[in-house]
Length: 203
Image 1 (tube, one colour):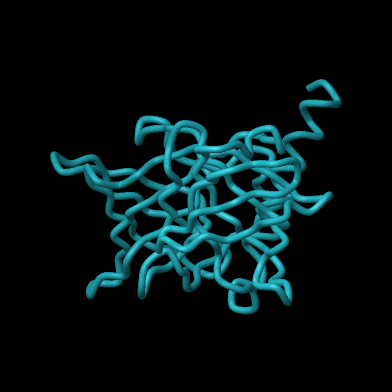
Image 2 (cartoon, helix red, strand yellow):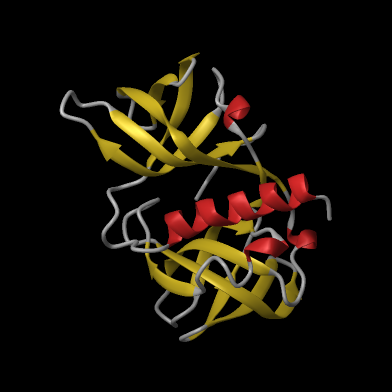
């Protein structure tokens, strides 16, 4: 692999380390659409309709999410699952993102709370088994401290992580700010971002 491509993969992996560690300590993630981009300054319309001024940190890491499908998920694939816990202990997935191969062993494998929906969880894990049914697929995934059964359906959003850069941060782009610092004037400084390339990130 060429040095530039490898560096891009590692950078994307590091961005997700920052996003995946210390979930309980991080401020809530910020989701929305860029209304205006002027250099490092963004005007963001959040999903609750508020307008937020965002400064992109000089060292901010940007990763992209592109459309994918269940067919892209195989045994031994490293994925992140946003979903709702069910009474039987399984997780009903509403969003799955497929990590880059270079992120395996870099992004922590874990299961914990998530803020995409009330009561939702995020599981970073390796696919160990896939069972296909008429309604979707059931995945068994394993992570460092255990395993989970993941139920998918027609409404489960599937995306794949790809290397990105700040050029992706333009008007109309749907983003998730994964790590940020709130400023005294109410604005935020964005440190780690996901950008939906032609999609709205669902996680």
